[in-house]
Image 1 (tube, rainbow, N blue to C red):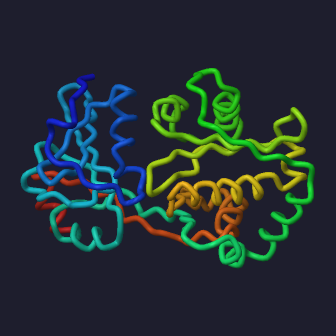
Image 2: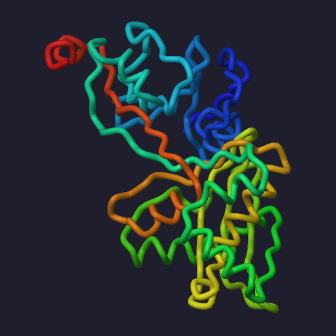
Image 3: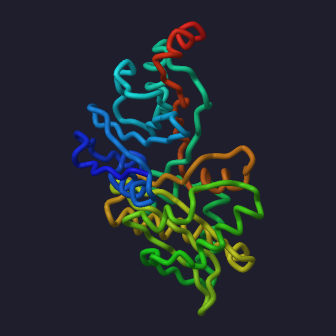
Length: 279
């Protein structure tokens, strides 16, 4: 695939804490061989090719482009319902439903942060704090064979879900891996991608001892406090999947709030009359 120097592709937009809008996202995709570009308004484009066909993807744009000037058909992952409203009636066709994400704000002090947790979640955190568990953290080693990446690949196969490939984390410029240890034994782990002023929960793993010790609660709490100390104000815990109610309860129990994205739209000059007809 062709690699492009994004510095020559027009203005970029300042980060607002969302992963897809941060320069690290483009850097990571470029490192993985993606074909990238920028529209005159500064919006990032990712090009996918199938034979002679070319399709652009616009991930959570800060600014919606003029659809009439798009150089190719495009999938636009609208960032919000406000963008949905702007795209409605434009000729773009809705393809995928919105996504609900759990977002934890890290701007409050520790006492207020705890008060925002659900009671059961807070009780598990207190339980974890009474265990002989030590939390340590450092950047993720740039090792394709790292045990956490191997464990995540095994989890995906066992549970039948798909996520970003392991090399995504290896190419991400700033990471933080938090481990819960008892002696030399690792009980649980959480990996975060940093994109100031935001961060994203990326991978989690726990063994039986970690689950018994409520280690994930302690990991997320300690990670949130450390991230806040580094100036991170927004922690994206990922989508709320109706097929994983337990994980959704864990995310929301931490005090996270639901943030809805918009639809994913197909914008094409050739399909615009149909798009206006069906609304």
